[in-house]
Every structure is written in structure tokens, then in C-alpha cells.
Amino acid sequence: MPIGVRALFEDSEHRIWMGKRDGEIEIYTHNMDYLGYLNENGTIARTGTPFVGVAYHIMQDSHGNIWIATKGEGVALLEKSGERFKITRFKYDEDDIYSLSHNSVYGLHEDAYGRIWVATFGGGLNYIRKTPEGKYTFDSRLKGMELGADDYIIKPFSATYLKARVENLLAQRVKLQQLYCANLMKSADKVRGEEEQPPQSTLSAYDRKFMEKLTELMEKNMDNGDLIVDDLVKELAVSRSVFFKKLKMLTGLAPIEFIKEMRVKRAAQLIENGDYTMTQIAYMVGINDPRYFSKYFKSYFGMAPTDYKEKMKAERQNQ
Image (cartoon, rainbow, N blue to C red; front, side):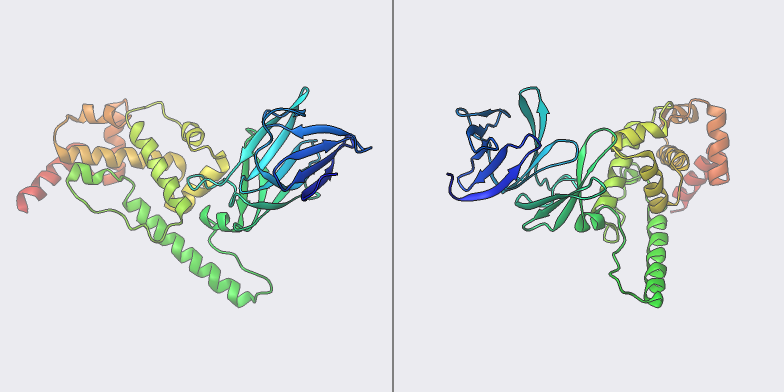
């Protein structure tokens, strides 16, 4: 009989899984006949490289998948594939806001809604989501804040307190929208020779990364007149609804408006630079009809591109 058992579990085939202190996960029949141990390649055998990680909890979800919580090695998902299991590991990644919050996991539980909850040693409680694309993500209260949740209010709370918090959050959102509407183009300093950067202290880590990535995508596709919103959604790896809501919240602009504003502001920068014709600038910002470019530019700045050029020239001469 094994000693130092850390996890004990019976699967749907009535096999007994024992996670031992030395790291091996031994599997027995319901009569306690030894079958072997779990290997890194997903087989149950008496030889081979053992599964890596000391199991602290093992469970089977409503889809028949087996989940293993380990100390220091994160969470492992075992999906049946013929005579073996396909093993997928989930670990903490500081560059991935959707990763497991800590690699030491002591408990797993599936609730009535099919959500799997993950109790970590140093990263709080996570629950696992499966995206429509089949990717698993880990959400926690801390990550909720990082993902853009403005705050959490713990019950009980008064209506006065709730109203004050909401008013404060709305005021902060207005400031963020003003900030990004004024600083849509991070590359402005390259064109104008300025070093000023927008303040970042009021943004969550996720909001900052979201806008940086979006601006980078627009920079790469500035001359692409065929760019559509779905292209940005795909590159950002978010749902269309999340993209629309997040962008509107941060900039006050709908996606189409955002794309147009990025283009027209870049056009203004290129005009100020003075190295290109208006036709060249129109194509450089992805507007393939020079007449439409002139019309749209005027609707935004209140003057035609040529008038804007003369205005900027006069301002420089007066400095």
C-alpha cells in the first residue's frame, strides 16, 4: 500500500488514482490491483517517465476530462485520446493576464454551471473559462481588476456609497477618454520631434496593454485601405463585443470612428512634416480616394488639407 498519499480520486471507470508525496500518481483497479503510474506521455504504465508534479487534488469534470492540481507545477488537463491521455499544462505567466495566478494549486471543484474553480496557495481563487475557440483562460478577482474592472464592492453596502463610487468611476472614465482622444498616435513625437508621452498612471495594466497593442496594429496597417474591425478583433484575440465595449469605454469612440480618427491624425502629422503630396498622404493613411480624403479631413479639422498645410506653415514662421 502506498504511503505519503497527497491526493485520492476515483474516475468514471472506477479506477483509483493516488497522488503520492514523491510525485508519482499510481492507478489501481476498484479491487486495488496495481495498473501502473501516470507517465508524462499520457499513458498508464509500469515503466517510463512519471508525470511531473506532486498532485494535491485530482478530479474529473462533467465532460470526462481529468484535472490535476499540483504543488509548483500548476494545473494539468488530461483529455482521453485513444489509449492514452493528452496532457495540457497551465502555469502562471507574468506576460499573460489570462494565465493561472499561481503555480501551487491545492484544490479543484466543478460547480453546477460547469465552471471549474481553482484554489491556489498564493494567488487566490481562479475559475476556468473555455473560449469559443477552445482556449482555456483563468480568471481571478485580481485579474478582474487588471482586466479593467473598475472596482469591487463587498456586500452589504449602502445606496449612498454605491452612488458615490459610480459617480467617481464615471468621472475617471471621462478623463481616460479625453486622454486617449488627445493621444491616439503614440508616434506623434517621431513626426513632430516631441518627446511628450501620455500619462499612464490612471490606466490598469490590461487597459494600457490593450491600447498599446491596438495602436501598434493601426501603425502596421495605416496604409491598408482594406482594414476592417474584424481584423483588429482577430489580432487582439478578444470577442467582438468585448472589443467594442473596451474601446468605447477608453476612447469614447466606436471602432470605425477610432480607425478614421487614427488615419486623419496621422495625415495631419504627415502634412505638418511637409515631405509628401496630398495624394501620397491619402494613400499612406489607407484612404485610396484623394477626393474623399480631402472631404473627410475637412469634416474633422474644419479646413481642407491644403489650407491646413498653409496654416501650419504660417504658425512655424511666426514662432
